[in-house]
Amino acid sequence: MAIKTRRSATSIKIDPNVRCLRIYPVEEGVKAKNIEDLKTVGIKLSREQAIHLSRVLLAVAQEWDEIDLTAWRTNKRQSDGTYIVTVTTAARDRRR
Image (cartoon, rainbow, N blue to C red):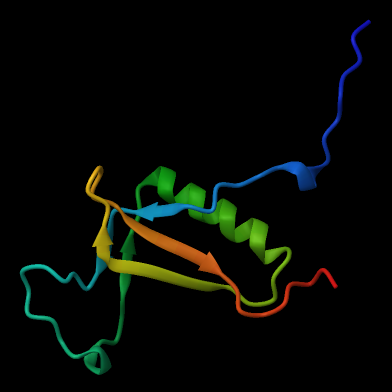
């Protein structure tokens, strides 16, 4: 009889490298407004990207009191044309 090993839920690792298809407003080709004139920003995600982002957010929300999302709209990856979205916190996490 083979012994099965068990892993706790805390051993599950989630890839924090979230990507998106587009970040609005775009930089290229359109005269940009002043940042103080912008009322909204937008992020376009594929289905897979949305699921990935939601998994990362769910995981960190269980540990962090505050979450910062940063979308890097001027840094397009050459290989697939996607943009990075970072999920970070400046606050201490709940594990004290």
